[in-house]
Length: 434
Ligand code: DOR
Ligand code: ZN
Image (cartoon, rainbow, N blue to C red):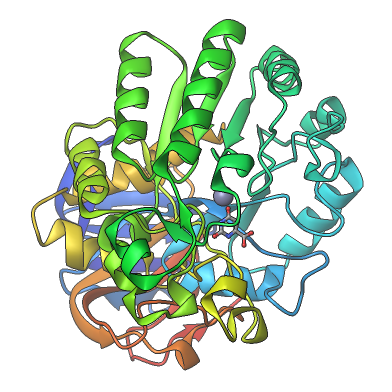
């Protein structure tokens, strides 16, 4: 079976493609790219992309799929459907499930469920057993199971001696530590960013220093151990400075930011909407400007959603008691297009690096992008499509978005995983096929 994608505008800076081409797929592969390809056979499925953008399948390296254990929030199936709808062909899922992904059996379970899912899934293993920060997880066995990255995510390893040993051990396999940087003691009972807004709202504050202290500590430990460190969802100006300086010193560090930390400030918390409660918290205008500058300067390696779906009840009631997290897979790419690309902060070429090639590198994946012989993982985006974010249309079980009601320009419309169209929204009804 052949699929001919006609008149797409390819964006692939790594393969030096930027322009209109036809792409022919057979099975799971791209077999031909040329300015014009005519269908030779009525059996070929031909799709006119009418100038829509075609990029290498995007990779979200920070999602929470919640299964096993929290299937009321999300399952591997629904999370992968949300990913396909968001234009992602591969996602890496965090280990804070129940049981925690601190052992090969749990990873095996996630991988077997993911085989039937809409997109490809790479489980991240935990650094310590149960993410409790006390005893190292079964890192060697997890690496045999194909795990490339380790994180205790929202429960960062507070004991510096254990973190040092984790880095030495994970580094000995040439694998990567993904670091949610937060000094839990300094963050205390805080629920939003510390500053003018937290004062006028009367909400308990989290200082930027709670994040920055851990960034500083772990950069020092990365230098000491030589391990590869990936800083997750960096959100502060001083954090950007620390990472910029560490990169100059040759420390093996990569850094990720989220769409919500790029497009919202702590002003968004003013209505006490629990869907604006997230960890790290939405920061000040100066912090957001520093992140955008980091994007422009090429310091930031990856944009990742930190998709953190929760139930309605988890987000119900007072701001103080709501759980942290934003359901982000289905809005990430449109927000970036609408608020960053159209505003001239970044280009599409930058985004393809930030959301496909760089996350692949951090995750230890080999992706070839758009070229003949490569696996046909493709994200197709209509930059002109206008749409309104509606919770009820989310494929994710997590309806917790602060972007409900936002009008956005540009939307993923076709997602192709290994040559197969898994998501088609050209007609506006967001159909899944897998
Ligand atoms: O907002 C967040 N939610 N931040 C985290 O680090 C964890 C995540 C979750 O698991 O819900
Ligand atoms: Zn986190």
